[in-house]
Image (cartoon, rainbow, N blue to C red; front, side, top):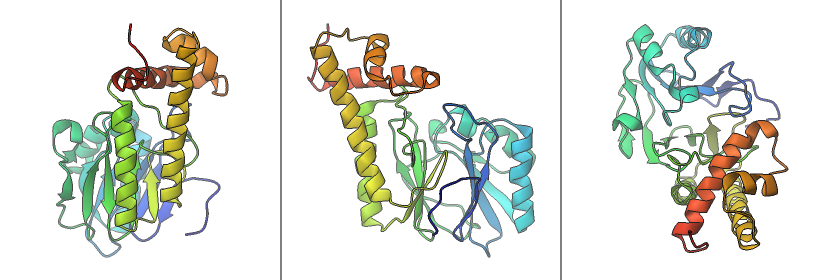
Length: 267
């Protein structure tokens, strides 16, 4: 696959096509990636993360599916945040396809049986960004759809209190092991560019999270109040002001981790 520098969605290999949603924002980057997955000669396909509840976006998704001559067999989500799953019910009503979400208990770990899409999908639990985050491994394409677990150009927000840093770190380790043991070549993310160097990117994501954790612990030990606002002001001056709400959530997640692991004493 040719290295990418700009992302507008489109075809990725033989088994994945991205319809980029028009919901650009500080937290959604250039928009949500809605993925259409299926073998070229299969009669059906599955939509992963139908995106925000936006009629124009859904029409673009349905237009692409119609152009392939396939039917929509199922709608699945990497997690239940509105920018990924907000249109799931609307798409289901328009297409007749069922919706499968982890938050409803419908995506247990292991193989997901959808008969007519020509590929096998394995569900990988990846909590941390949210409690219901999962990934989808497509063996034939040698890729994992990772939702908001990891990005090519930025770090992931741990959406405390639903998101938990300990779970997130464990998920990065689980993802790294899966990538290595299954010879995964690509990570298809929920926002932005495809990750073409999965093992290296996971290592760097973990290192960044540990760096931030160590900064928070050191700052509190140095006398900065163990409060999100104070720590964000002290440590996150390299982050755009539009992302400060997310930074506060991540700091709260780091504090909780530090207390639970004994790095800091909770008062």
